[in-house]
Image (cartoon, rainbow, N blue to C red):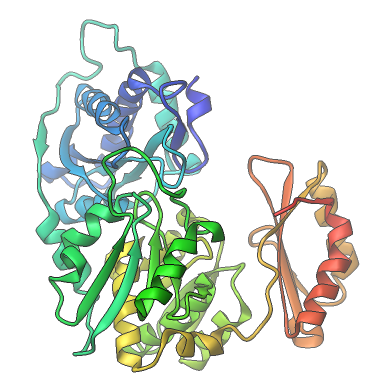
Length: 472
């Protein structure tokens, strides 16, 4: 049963079957045992390294799951700093702010309301995935037995509730500088944790910030329901935001996911801004303050990202897809900023972690400094037509990739950093990346070209080799 809830990067499933309070207890015990051991390897003996931060989202099942998780953690020998109902980046902040052994966020992110789960991080909020401790936590959890009359550790930890909102707000707002300009922004909280976090940090309707006006959309999050699914990557979920931006004549709009670690931007016309285009533009703002720094980006991103980074004097760093790899890329290269197509944005000065609120703050700051409209600053970054991600059903994924490599190997540069990237941009004006799904018999194609006609021809050429195209 544990295998059904443990995924590649987190714990997530439907509540109460198979994820329930009994499993939450076992997962808490496994987290305590693993995170304490991991922290002990540092050689530090600071008292807070016996603590694990626990936060939870607004889902109706979160209070009871969180209580059971905390019980498992304390019976596993660790103490708990309970930070309450918060966004996921809040937990990353708290782990670093207090220098704890790790953190657990009780959330199912963008999934429907019947789902829940746990995002686990170790010291310094480094992510815990299957290869970095999650398999070990699963093993420990499987061995934990709540029916035993004695605790699984020689000591039982204590629980302390902490309100860190003031410190968190101060941290997020250190990234905000409107420079005296006034901005009006529509924020769609998707009935998720941004509905709590945005008013706590920026004030209700932005009242805490001079020059900022926030039009609040779907901030209510106490009913366990979503007016639209809390996934900003789905275009249909942005329609209300787009209409409200146009109606309110706002400068831009932002839509957050359920746990507040991702966001999407629409410009003043209500047009969706690609996350890679936003990364390309924000790179210039970060490099103006950090000359010559590295900028990390998802390898599916537009060529304009690399071009913008080089133009601004920075060092482009292509990264594998996924927060585990992007955070590692920032840490290994010292990159000041990073962005993914998924809406995750990473910041060196945020412990290399992603944050939807800091992405909001940096976007507002850069727009204010530009003195231009959002559509104007993004337009140069959106020069090349893109296919978007196209999925294909295919049983022999490795065979399809091998055929692609054989067909196009002599025409361009190939690399296998994440899937197969074929780069014919310099000679033929196009490139693509094809990645395998970890969980389904799917290949995922992302392609880009200098012209729409060339892009259409490339997709038409490559598609038959990848299997049956899945309808959008």
